[in-house]
Image (cartoon, rainbow, N blue to C red; front, side):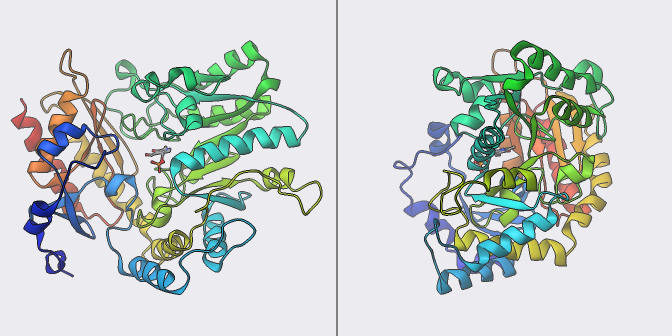
Length: 448
Ligand SMILES: Cc1ncc(COP(=O)(O)O)c(C=O)c1O
Protein backbone atom coordinates (compact mmCIF):
# COMPACT_ATOMS: atom_id res chain seq x y z
CA UNK A 1 0.00 0.00 0.00
CA UNK A 2 1.29 3.43 -0.85
CA UNK A 3 0.45 5.66 2.07
CA UNK A 4 0.28 8.66 -0.23
CA UNK A 5 -2.85 7.24 -1.89
CA UNK A 6 -5.06 8.15 1.03
CA UNK A 7 -3.71 11.54 1.81
CA UNK A 8 -4.02 15.02 0.50
CA UNK A 9 -0.94 15.77 2.55
CA UNK A 10 -0.53 19.49 2.00
CA UNK A 11 -4.16 20.04 2.93
CA UNK A 12 -3.60 18.43 6.33
CA UNK A 13 -1.11 21.10 7.29
CA UNK A 14 -3.10 24.01 5.99
CA UNK A 15 -6.36 23.06 7.68
CA UNK A 16 -5.02 22.39 11.18
CA UNK A 17 -5.59 24.76 14.09
CA UNK A 18 -2.58 24.10 16.33
CA UNK A 19 -3.55 26.36 19.23
CA UNK A 20 -6.04 24.26 21.27
CA UNK A 21 -3.79 21.24 21.72
CA UNK A 22 -1.42 20.96 24.71
CA UNK A 23 1.18 18.40 23.64
CA UNK A 24 2.74 15.96 26.16
CA UNK A 25 6.49 16.02 26.96
CA UNK A 26 7.00 18.60 24.19
CA UNK A 27 8.20 22.21 24.09
CA UNK A 28 4.79 23.41 22.86
CA UNK A 29 5.70 26.91 21.68
CA UNK A 30 8.71 25.76 19.74
CA UNK A 31 6.76 22.85 18.25
CA UNK A 32 3.89 25.04 17.11
CA UNK A 33 6.33 27.41 15.42
CA UNK A 34 7.62 24.52 13.29
CA UNK A 35 5.27 21.54 13.72
CA UNK A 36 6.22 18.01 12.81
CA UNK A 37 2.98 16.29 11.88
CA UNK A 38 2.73 12.67 10.87
CA UNK A 39 -0.06 11.93 8.43
CA UNK A 40 0.54 8.31 7.51
CA UNK A 41 2.55 5.23 8.40
CA UNK A 42 3.39 1.88 6.84
CA UNK A 43 5.92 -0.75 7.99
CA UNK A 44 9.22 1.08 8.63
CA UNK A 45 8.12 4.50 7.43
CA UNK A 46 6.06 7.53 8.26
CA UNK A 47 4.80 10.13 5.91
CA UNK A 48 4.79 13.67 7.22
CA UNK A 49 2.06 16.14 6.42
CA UNK A 50 4.62 17.95 4.25
CA UNK A 51 4.73 14.85 2.10
CA UNK A 52 8.19 13.72 3.25
CA UNK A 53 9.05 10.13 4.08
CA UNK A 54 10.61 9.41 7.45
CA UNK A 55 12.36 6.19 8.45
CA UNK A 56 11.20 5.19 11.93
CA UNK A 57 14.29 4.48 14.01
CA UNK A 58 12.40 4.24 17.30
CA UNK A 59 9.40 1.98 16.62
CA UNK A 60 6.97 4.83 17.25
CA UNK A 61 7.89 5.28 20.91
CA UNK A 62 9.43 1.86 21.64
CA UNK A 63 6.12 0.21 20.78
CA UNK A 64 5.57 -0.50 17.08
CA UNK A 65 7.72 -3.63 17.13
CA UNK A 66 6.05 -5.31 14.14
CA UNK A 67 6.09 -2.16 12.00
CA UNK A 68 3.29 0.26 11.24
CA UNK A 69 -0.25 -0.41 10.06
CA UNK A 70 0.22 -4.16 9.78
CA UNK A 71 -2.77 -5.62 8.03
CA UNK A 72 -3.75 -8.39 10.51
CA UNK A 73 -3.75 -5.88 13.38
CA UNK A 74 -5.69 -3.28 11.41
CA UNK A 75 -8.27 -5.89 10.43
CA UNK A 76 -8.60 -7.25 13.98
CA UNK A 77 -9.32 -3.76 15.31
CA UNK A 78 -11.79 -3.03 12.51
CA UNK A 79 -13.60 -6.33 13.08
CA UNK A 80 -13.79 -5.88 16.84
CA UNK A 81 -15.03 -2.29 16.50
CA UNK A 82 -17.82 -3.46 14.23
CA UNK A 83 -18.72 -6.51 16.36
CA UNK A 84 -18.60 -5.30 19.94
CA UNK A 85 -17.14 -1.92 20.71
CA UNK A 86 -17.22 -1.91 24.50
CA UNK A 87 -18.48 -4.09 27.27
CA UNK A 88 -18.65 -3.10 30.93
CA UNK A 89 -15.25 -3.79 32.44
CA UNK A 90 -16.36 -4.75 35.94
CA UNK A 91 -18.36 -7.93 36.58
CA UNK A 92 -18.34 -8.55 32.81
CA UNK A 93 -15.81 -9.51 30.19
CA UNK A 94 -15.47 -10.45 26.53
CA UNK A 95 -13.56 -13.10 24.55
CA UNK A 96 -10.60 -10.99 23.36
CA UNK A 97 -9.70 -10.12 26.95
CA UNK A 98 -9.36 -13.80 27.91
CA UNK A 99 -7.49 -14.61 24.70
CA UNK A 100 -5.02 -11.77 25.24
CA UNK A 101 -4.45 -12.86 28.87
CA UNK A 102 -3.80 -16.44 27.79
CA UNK A 103 -1.38 -15.37 25.07
CA UNK A 104 0.58 -12.93 27.20
CA UNK A 105 0.92 -15.41 30.08
CA UNK A 106 2.19 -18.03 27.59
CA UNK A 107 4.90 -15.60 26.52
CA UNK A 108 5.80 -14.81 30.15
CA UNK A 109 8.41 -16.68 32.19
CA UNK A 110 7.13 -19.94 33.67
CA UNK A 111 4.98 -19.44 36.73
CA UNK A 112 3.73 -15.96 35.81
CA UNK A 113 0.33 -17.15 34.84
CA UNK A 114 -2.03 -14.27 35.58
CA UNK A 115 -2.39 -10.93 33.79
CA UNK A 116 -4.21 -7.78 34.94
CA UNK A 117 -4.90 -5.31 32.12
CA UNK A 118 -4.49 -1.54 32.17
CA UNK A 119 -4.41 1.04 29.39
CA UNK A 120 -0.82 2.23 29.64
CA UNK A 121 2.56 1.60 31.13
CA UNK A 122 2.01 4.22 33.82
CA UNK A 123 -1.15 2.49 34.95
CA UNK A 124 0.61 -0.87 34.81
CA UNK A 125 3.29 0.39 37.19
CA UNK A 126 0.84 1.91 39.67
CA UNK A 127 -1.19 -1.31 39.52
CA UNK A 128 1.91 -3.43 40.24
CA UNK A 129 2.85 -1.26 43.22
CA UNK A 130 -0.68 -1.61 44.60
CA UNK A 131 -0.60 -5.38 44.06
CA UNK A 132 2.69 -5.49 46.01
CA UNK A 133 1.15 -3.71 49.00
CA UNK A 134 -2.03 -5.80 48.79
CA UNK A 135 -0.05 -9.03 48.55
CA UNK A 136 1.94 -8.45 51.72
CA UNK A 137 -1.15 -7.35 53.60
CA UNK A 138 -2.99 -10.46 52.47
CA UNK A 139 -0.07 -12.51 53.81
CA UNK A 140 -0.41 -10.73 57.14
CA UNK A 141 2.64 -8.51 56.69
CA UNK A 142 1.82 -4.83 56.27
CA UNK A 143 5.00 -4.04 54.30
CA UNK A 144 4.50 -0.64 52.73
CA UNK A 145 7.86 0.81 51.62
CA UNK A 146 9.03 0.73 48.00
CA UNK A 147 12.44 0.80 46.37
CA UNK A 148 13.02 2.34 42.94
CA UNK A 149 16.21 3.48 41.26
CA UNK A 150 17.82 6.74 40.26
CA UNK A 151 17.40 7.38 36.54
CA UNK A 152 14.48 4.96 36.45
CA UNK A 153 11.39 5.81 34.41
CA UNK A 154 8.13 4.20 35.42
CA UNK A 155 5.60 6.52 33.81
CA UNK A 156 3.82 9.55 35.16
CA UNK A 157 1.32 8.33 37.75
CA UNK A 158 2.11 9.33 41.32
CA UNK A 159 3.36 5.84 42.14
CA UNK A 160 5.54 5.55 39.04
CA UNK A 161 6.86 9.08 39.44
CA UNK A 162 7.78 8.36 43.05
CA UNK A 163 9.72 5.16 42.42
CA UNK A 164 11.15 6.71 39.25
CA UNK A 165 14.32 8.69 39.34
CA UNK A 166 14.09 11.39 36.67
CA UNK A 167 14.63 14.77 38.25
CA UNK A 168 12.62 16.93 35.80
CA UNK A 169 9.65 14.58 36.13
CA UNK A 170 9.73 14.77 39.94
CA UNK A 171 10.86 18.31 40.73
CA UNK A 172 7.55 20.17 40.52
CA UNK A 173 5.54 17.39 42.15
CA UNK A 174 8.00 16.64 44.90
CA UNK A 175 5.71 17.46 47.89
CA UNK A 176 3.03 15.13 46.56
CA UNK A 177 5.23 12.11 45.85
CA UNK A 178 4.27 8.84 47.50
CA UNK A 179 5.97 8.56 50.91
CA UNK A 180 8.14 5.62 51.94
CA UNK A 181 10.26 5.31 48.80
CA UNK A 182 14.03 4.79 48.61
CA UNK A 183 16.17 4.69 45.50
CA UNK A 184 19.03 2.44 44.51
CA UNK A 185 21.92 4.18 42.78
CA UNK A 186 21.77 4.14 38.98
CA UNK A 187 24.32 2.03 37.14
CA UNK A 188 25.61 4.57 34.63
CA UNK A 189 29.35 5.24 34.88
CA UNK A 190 31.30 6.68 31.97
CA UNK A 191 34.67 6.23 33.63
CA UNK A 192 34.20 2.50 34.12
CA UNK A 193 31.89 1.47 31.33
CA UNK A 194 32.02 3.88 28.38
CA UNK A 195 31.67 2.21 24.96
CA UNK A 196 30.79 -1.20 26.43
CA UNK A 197 29.21 -3.54 23.91
CA UNK A 198 26.22 -5.23 25.50
CA UNK A 199 26.36 -5.63 29.28
CA UNK A 200 29.13 -3.67 31.01
CA UNK A 201 31.56 -5.50 33.28
CA UNK A 202 31.50 -3.04 36.18
CA UNK A 203 28.63 -2.32 38.54
CA UNK A 204 26.94 -5.51 39.82
CA UNK A 205 27.78 -4.44 43.39
CA UNK A 206 25.46 -1.42 43.05
CA UNK A 207 22.56 -3.81 43.72
CA UNK A 208 23.96 -4.33 47.23
CA UNK A 209 22.45 -1.00 48.21
CA UNK A 210 19.34 -3.06 48.99
CA UNK A 211 21.26 -4.20 52.09
CA UNK A 212 21.76 -0.60 53.23
CA UNK A 213 18.08 0.28 52.72
CA UNK A 214 16.96 -2.96 54.41
CA UNK A 215 19.19 -2.19 57.39
CA UNK A 216 17.91 1.39 57.58
CA UNK A 217 14.18 0.62 57.62
CA UNK A 218 14.20 -3.05 58.55
CA UNK A 219 13.38 -5.31 55.61
CA UNK A 220 10.05 -6.28 57.18
CA UNK A 221 8.76 -2.83 56.19
CA UNK A 222 9.72 -3.08 52.52
CA UNK A 223 7.24 -4.41 49.97
CA UNK A 224 8.98 -4.34 46.62
CA UNK A 225 11.85 -3.29 44.39
CA UNK A 226 11.06 -2.01 40.90
CA UNK A 227 13.57 -1.53 38.09
CA UNK A 228 13.64 -1.53 34.32
CA UNK A 229 15.89 -4.45 33.26
CA UNK A 230 17.38 -2.02 30.72
CA UNK A 231 16.56 1.60 31.57
CA UNK A 232 15.23 3.16 28.38
CA UNK A 233 13.97 6.68 28.80
CA UNK A 234 17.04 7.89 30.67
CA UNK A 235 19.30 6.91 27.81
CA UNK A 236 19.52 3.11 27.38
CA UNK A 237 21.38 2.04 30.53
CA UNK A 238 22.28 -1.62 30.18
CA UNK A 239 22.51 -3.60 33.45
CA UNK A 240 26.05 -4.57 34.46
CA UNK A 241 26.81 -8.28 34.30
CA UNK A 242 25.41 -10.03 37.39
CA UNK A 243 23.45 -6.96 38.57
CA UNK A 244 19.93 -8.29 37.97
CA UNK A 245 20.87 -11.68 39.45
CA UNK A 246 22.10 -9.88 42.58
CA UNK A 247 18.84 -7.94 42.85
CA UNK A 248 16.96 -11.23 42.70
CA UNK A 249 19.14 -12.80 45.42
CA UNK A 250 18.72 -9.86 47.76
CA UNK A 251 14.97 -9.64 47.21
CA UNK A 252 14.71 -13.34 48.05
CA UNK A 253 16.90 -12.89 51.10
CA UNK A 254 14.69 -10.11 52.49
CA UNK A 255 11.27 -11.27 51.27
CA UNK A 256 10.82 -8.35 48.84
CA UNK A 257 8.88 -8.67 45.62
CA UNK A 258 10.95 -7.93 42.53
CA UNK A 259 9.12 -6.05 39.78
CA UNK A 260 10.63 -5.73 36.31
CA UNK A 261 9.15 -2.83 34.40
CA UNK A 262 9.26 -4.29 30.90
CA UNK A 263 7.12 -1.64 29.26
CA UNK A 264 9.81 -1.13 26.62
CA UNK A 265 11.95 -4.25 27.01
CA UNK A 266 8.97 -6.57 26.47
CA UNK A 267 7.91 -8.17 23.20
CA UNK A 268 11.19 -8.81 21.46
CA UNK A 269 13.22 -5.71 22.17
CA UNK A 270 16.04 -7.71 23.82
CA UNK A 271 15.81 -10.81 21.63
CA UNK A 272 13.14 -12.76 23.51
CA UNK A 273 9.58 -12.15 24.66
CA UNK A 274 10.75 -10.44 27.85
CA UNK A 275 14.13 -9.24 29.10
CA UNK A 276 13.53 -11.58 32.05
CA UNK A 277 14.14 -14.47 29.62
CA UNK A 278 17.14 -12.82 28.01
CA UNK A 279 18.88 -12.13 31.32
CA UNK A 280 17.71 -15.37 32.93
CA UNK A 281 16.24 -13.62 35.96
CA UNK A 282 12.59 -14.14 36.86
CA UNK A 283 10.94 -11.35 38.83
CA UNK A 284 7.69 -11.70 40.79
CA UNK A 285 5.81 -9.27 38.57
CA UNK A 286 6.33 -7.84 35.10
CA UNK A 287 4.71 -4.64 33.91
CA UNK A 288 4.14 -4.42 30.17
CA UNK A 289 2.46 -2.14 27.60
CA UNK A 290 3.55 -0.69 24.23
CA UNK A 291 4.62 -3.74 22.16
CA UNK A 292 1.77 -5.89 23.50
CA UNK A 293 -0.57 -4.23 20.99
CA UNK A 294 2.13 -2.92 18.63
CA UNK A 295 1.11 0.58 19.65
CA UNK A 296 -2.06 0.25 17.58
CA UNK A 297 -4.40 0.62 20.59
CA UNK A 298 -3.58 1.57 24.17
CA UNK A 299 -3.01 -1.49 26.35
CA UNK A 300 -0.79 -2.30 29.32
CA UNK A 301 -0.83 -4.76 32.14
CA UNK A 302 0.84 -6.62 34.96
CA UNK A 303 1.93 -10.25 34.93
CA UNK A 304 2.05 -11.85 38.35
CA UNK A 305 3.24 -15.12 39.76
CA UNK A 306 0.60 -17.65 40.70
CA UNK A 307 1.21 -17.25 44.45
CA UNK A 308 0.57 -13.50 44.24
CA UNK A 309 -2.76 -13.99 42.48
CA UNK A 310 -3.70 -16.74 44.91
CA UNK A 311 -2.87 -14.63 47.94
CA UNK A 312 -5.73 -12.33 46.89
CA UNK A 313 -8.19 -15.18 46.21
CA UNK A 314 -9.29 -15.64 49.79
CA UNK A 315 -12.31 -14.54 51.81
CA UNK A 316 -15.95 -14.85 50.72
CA UNK A 317 -16.08 -15.55 46.98
CA UNK A 318 -18.76 -12.90 46.30
CA UNK A 319 -16.44 -10.15 47.49
CA UNK A 320 -14.11 -8.15 45.25
CA UNK A 321 -10.55 -9.30 45.98
CA UNK A 322 -8.66 -6.28 44.62
CA UNK A 323 -10.26 -2.83 44.68
CA UNK A 324 -8.63 -1.60 41.54
CA UNK A 325 -9.38 -1.35 37.81
CA UNK A 326 -10.15 0.99 34.94
CA UNK A 327 -13.23 1.60 32.79
CA UNK A 328 -11.09 0.49 29.86
CA UNK A 329 -9.20 -2.39 31.51
CA UNK A 330 -8.93 -5.03 28.76
CA UNK A 331 -10.77 -2.83 26.26
CA UNK A 332 -12.13 -4.90 23.34
CA UNK A 333 -10.30 -2.96 20.61
CA UNK A 334 -7.01 -3.00 22.52
CA UNK A 335 -7.13 -6.68 23.43
CA UNK A 336 -8.20 -7.60 19.87
CA UNK A 337 -5.15 -5.66 18.66
CA UNK A 338 -2.99 -7.49 21.20
CA UNK A 339 -4.19 -10.93 20.10
CA UNK A 340 -3.45 -10.09 16.45
CA UNK A 341 -0.08 -8.58 17.43
CA UNK A 342 1.05 -11.60 19.43
CA UNK A 343 -0.07 -13.87 16.57
CA UNK A 344 1.99 -11.80 14.16
CA UNK A 345 5.08 -11.91 16.42
CA UNK A 346 4.75 -15.68 16.39
CA UNK A 347 3.97 -16.15 12.68
CA UNK A 348 6.87 -13.97 11.56
CA UNK A 349 9.21 -15.10 14.38
CA UNK A 350 9.88 -11.43 15.01
CA UNK A 351 11.65 -11.87 18.35
CA UNK A 352 14.20 -14.11 16.58
CA UNK A 353 14.44 -11.64 13.74
CA UNK A 354 15.32 -8.84 16.16
CA UNK A 355 17.87 -11.09 17.84
CA UNK A 356 19.51 -11.90 14.50
CA UNK A 357 19.82 -8.24 13.59
CA UNK A 358 21.23 -7.24 17.00
CA UNK A 359 24.95 -8.00 16.32
CA UNK A 360 24.82 -5.96 13.10
CA UNK A 361 23.05 -3.16 14.94
CA UNK A 362 25.73 -3.27 17.65
CA UNK A 363 28.59 -2.94 15.15
CA UNK A 364 26.80 -0.15 13.27
CA UNK A 365 26.15 1.78 16.48
CA UNK A 366 29.73 1.46 17.67
CA UNK A 367 31.02 2.67 14.30
CA UNK A 368 29.99 6.13 15.52
CA UNK A 369 32.76 6.12 18.13
CA UNK A 370 35.06 9.05 17.47
CA UNK A 371 32.35 11.16 15.81
CA UNK A 372 31.99 14.76 17.07
CA UNK A 373 30.49 15.06 20.58
CA UNK A 374 30.09 11.29 21.12
CA UNK A 375 31.15 10.35 24.67
CA UNK A 376 29.53 6.92 24.99
CA UNK A 377 27.73 4.27 22.97
CA UNK A 378 25.60 1.61 24.63
CA UNK A 379 23.52 -1.22 23.19
CA UNK A 380 21.55 -4.29 24.05
CA UNK A 381 19.30 -6.26 21.67
CA UNK A 382 17.68 -3.69 19.40
CA UNK A 383 18.15 -0.86 21.89
CA UNK A 384 20.94 1.64 21.43
CA UNK A 385 22.05 4.87 23.07
CA UNK A 386 24.62 7.40 21.88
CA UNK A 387 25.51 9.85 24.60
CA UNK A 388 26.66 13.29 23.49
CA UNK A 389 28.77 15.82 25.34
CA UNK A 390 26.29 18.34 26.80
CA UNK A 391 26.47 21.98 25.70
CA UNK A 392 27.74 23.85 28.78
CA UNK A 393 24.82 25.58 30.52
CA UNK A 394 22.23 24.08 28.16
CA UNK A 395 21.34 20.58 29.26
CA UNK A 396 19.75 18.33 26.59
CA UNK A 397 20.28 20.90 23.82
CA UNK A 398 22.88 18.89 21.89
CA UNK A 399 20.85 15.69 21.65
CA UNK A 400 17.72 17.65 20.75
CA UNK A 401 19.57 19.43 17.94
CA UNK A 402 20.78 16.06 16.68
CA UNK A 403 17.20 14.74 16.71
CA UNK A 404 16.10 17.76 14.62
CA UNK A 405 18.96 17.31 12.15
CA UNK A 406 18.10 13.63 11.67
CA UNK A 407 14.44 14.53 11.20
CA UNK A 408 15.38 17.00 8.46
CA UNK A 409 17.37 14.20 6.82
CA UNK A 410 14.42 11.78 6.90
CA UNK A 411 15.17 9.61 9.96
CA UNK A 412 13.31 9.63 13.26
CA UNK A 413 15.52 9.13 16.32
CA UNK A 414 14.73 10.05 19.91
CA UNK A 415 16.57 12.44 22.17
CA UNK A 416 16.50 11.26 25.78
CA UNK A 417 18.35 13.78 27.92
CA UNK A 418 21.91 13.90 26.50
CA UNK A 419 21.44 10.61 24.65
CA UNK A 420 20.15 9.71 21.23
CA UNK A 421 18.10 6.54 21.62
CA UNK A 422 17.53 4.07 18.79
CA UNK A 423 14.98 1.26 18.94
CA UNK A 424 14.01 0.26 15.41
CA UNK A 425 11.04 -2.02 14.76
CA UNK A 426 11.95 -5.73 14.76
CA UNK A 427 11.22 -5.87 11.01
CA UNK A 428 14.17 -3.53 10.30
CA UNK A 429 16.75 -4.73 7.77
CA UNK A 430 20.49 -4.08 7.64
CA UNK A 431 19.79 -1.38 5.04
CA UNK A 432 17.51 0.40 7.49
CA UNK A 433 20.18 0.22 10.19
CA UNK A 434 22.73 1.61 7.70
CA UNK A 435 20.42 4.49 6.84
CA UNK A 436 19.75 5.33 10.49
CA UNK A 437 23.41 5.22 11.49
CA UNK A 438 24.56 6.97 8.29
CA UNK A 439 22.11 9.78 8.91
CA UNK A 440 23.25 10.11 12.52
CA UNK A 441 26.83 10.25 11.33
CA UNK A 442 25.98 13.05 8.87
CA UNK A 443 24.04 14.92 11.55
CA UNK A 444 26.91 14.70 14.04
CA UNK A 445 29.42 15.89 11.43
CA UNK A 446 27.14 18.82 10.61
CA UNK A 447 27.12 19.72 14.33
CA UNK A 448 30.93 19.66 14.67
C1 LIG B 1 9.83 1.54 31.54
C2 LIG B 1 8.59 2.36 31.35
N1 LIG B 1 7.61 2.26 32.24
C3 LIG B 1 6.46 2.95 32.11
C4 LIG B 1 6.28 3.78 31.04
C5 LIG B 1 5.01 4.57 30.92
O1 LIG B 1 4.23 4.08 29.89
P1 LIG B 1 3.03 4.97 29.32
O2 LIG B 1 3.65 6.13 28.61
O3 LIG B 1 2.30 4.01 28.41
O4 LIG B 1 2.20 5.39 30.47
C6 LIG B 1 7.28 3.91 30.07
C7 LIG B 1 7.11 4.78 28.91
O5 LIG B 1 7.98 4.97 28.10
C8 LIG B 1 8.48 3.18 30.24
O6 LIG B 1 9.48 3.30 29.36
